[in-house]
Amino acid sequence: MGTVDDYLEQLDPADRAAVGHVYDVVRATVPDVEQGTSYGMPALLHRGKALISVMRTRKHIGVYPYSGRVPAVVAESFADLDFDKGTIRFQPEQPLADDAIRAIVAARVAEIENPALRRRS
Image (cartoon, rainbow, N blue to C red; front, side, top):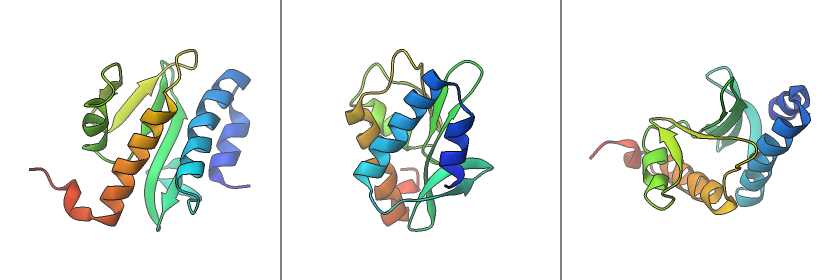
């Protein structure tokens, strides 16, 4: 068990399914991720850096890619994405498409691999 698994156990079944699915897609996309925490949130880490956190809030499920750039970059390809700087939001009954999850992960992995991408142009 790890921090992400512990967090999932605390959620009600509908939220657990929605949040767990995002984590499952991330794990399938980047198989070497590890569980940890970042900014006090359970997270998956890639090469020791925070890759993604997915958490239930009062009004939505938030996807936190630890980047102010990633949500806007991904939204260019997914017009219906509800996002703000640093977060992407969805409801359990309207989950994120797997392709959107993979795009979020790819953009964040690219930043981890090349920190210059994080700089604003």
